[in-house]
Image (tube, rainbow, N blue to C red; front, side, top):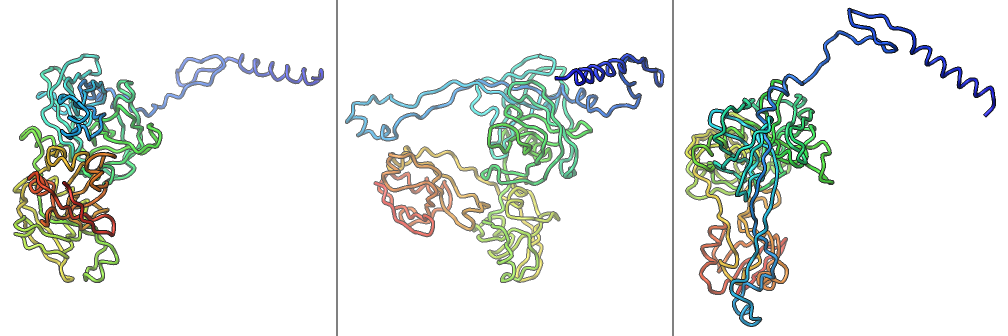
Length: 468
């Protein structure tokens, strides 16, 4: 480096220090800070007052429990196999202890009610709640609804702070929101964003969905935490994220407060959710179907089947009808209709607007009760089905639209069911020549213990599989 360059660098450095040495004059009564510009007296926008008000209502939830681990070959369920290889009768699945963490929201301080996600407290034997002030206490489950992923807890702890409900039906895309929870065990973490979209579904196709989408950061541990508006009201319960890495990428989902309030009221009253049932199989109205049906709309739920004796049957609804509104609210698609019906109580009167033969009609229906399928242990149902899992086909499913039957959801490789020829995504339409449209009907016919003949729909093929 030449002497000229060294001098130039030194001169520049001296100039900088010289500038910093110049004393600053005070502005607007603020003290001068040597070498720094004065701080403005204008108030700085902040969410701190609102956060300080609502944070005591957001809690950390820790759970302990045990789950059954099935780590054996399904052939061990066969008595002949066990005798042949001298395997003890008591050989069975083992239990594994677990610990998990999530978040929750106090929604009624007087009654000690805390809302969280159903998956946060699933299989929990012990639930510990930690408050913002580090108080700890235990809570018990009043009820849980896996279909909406909402659970209600109760505690006897006093001096709690609760969070008021907002009307999520009034929320708009673009509203500012704040997510509060305990991601990765970091208690009372606050993130902010906006409502990115409303009415999202397809995240949990077997559940009832009407998600609020937000870009406020939600990560593992945020589940069950609060999504609040700038008034400090509960807009939703954070439930899920869309991610490829396990971390936040700006797409999070919250259960809207209106749904939370509905589910909570039923859990308090019944300990479960008793959903209304219309009794129809439905699909989406597509443009290629609208013209031949004589329908001048592009949104609605197309009725493909009406269950005999159901609320829909008694109301006079027919296959081919297009339901476009319920109680004055427009129906965008089949999923929206299913969600709205699922948020109605058993026996509730509803008014449906539908289109038939190009003409609009209004009918009234009194909802029946939706019967939830009980878990079926395939090996106990029939030992030739051991290793398979089944479910009733969701009437609003986009994949199996208009199809009635029992879906084979999983088949363990090497199991009796696998060796019999069953495969995942098979649809069982008939058992011993009798039509089945639900898991309950399948269970009733298949539990006789004799040989079974299953009529299977696999893609575009129809098969007959014997189960011995």
